[in-house]
Image (cartoon, rainbow, N blue to C red):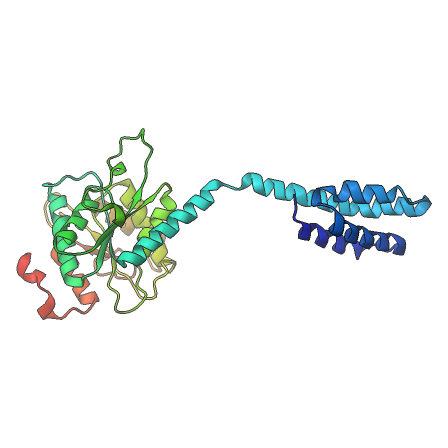
Length: 334
């Protein structure tokens, strides 16, 4: 049912429209009587109908017609409230809590470098070991908290490298159905439980991972790094570029977005070569960008393509103006 205040507003609004002075006075009296002695459910039945019976002749007919409009307005409002209550989804409250949980974790651990990538690579595999090295060296270079989706594979590798170097790590995990066989259901064991925010819905997880990389001051050092991955990584990559393009990330300072195209220097070609060809085709057809031109590795408008860990580190060191003497990675990697 509508609230008492809503019903009172309806009655007052409709009463002002009544030209019959007797009925207008009656309507005002009915409202006062109802507000003092009755409940919302009883207004039409116990107030309007009973008082109309006391009237005679034309006054009774006018009152039935004019006060009937009030009854209909209240009924319409009651139907609207009922529909809204039926449509209310419990997921709204749950999603709000998950977003707040992610925000609280980010506030506690600090924003920093956010890594996206496949959950399917294994320790010892080339991409895993390269990503582990990258996570270690970026932490040593920038000193920022390292974030991921808390899963295994590329997500784990980056955090493992940072953690072994002494860095803080955090994860925002998706909870999958127990009947699925997805490896990402189990969080990476390198993450302590207190460093994980768990989400039943992808929306809060995505919002959290974006927030973990925003820069509120020039001193903040963060980045979004996209490593080799599948559907999930491509989904997050596309969304990140849309947010960048529409300036909806919510960052006070620019944040670099890096696509790590491992293997692009070998004959077999880079992991993301075909994606870049597709994006280049989109630009030539006018679907992406302000002019029709091919994507360039030097195009910093939305993202940067890096082929090796060294290129990623050089780019971040230049972006954050790290002095040459503090770029220790040059001695550790080729």
